[in-house]
Amino acid sequence: MAFKKKFTPRRKFCRFCADKDLPLDYKRADILRDFITERGKIIARRITGTCAHHQRLLTREIKRARQMALLFYTAGHSSDVKKKSQI
Ligand SMILES: [Zn+2]
Image (cartoon, rainbow, N blue to C red; front, side):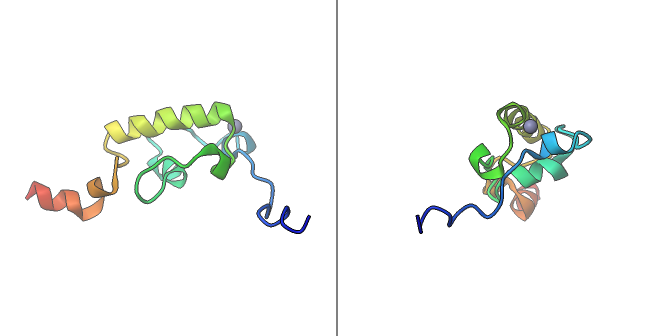
């Protein structure tokens, strides 16, 4: 009993279901960025609370965004590491 309530601060919900106007699109890297870690990993559904349907779409859009270089694949590809290699 004592240990059960500890990790439920509030009910998680799917952001895309809650807000129908929130675009789920590879062009909106600013939104997709909320669903990846700082190392570029897609955050699991059980953590973000995204529903199965939207998580599937989200995964696809994140992968598209990576191909378009709007997001990075791993930490090594982000920020100034890339700039240095281009010089
Ligand atoms: Zn949803």
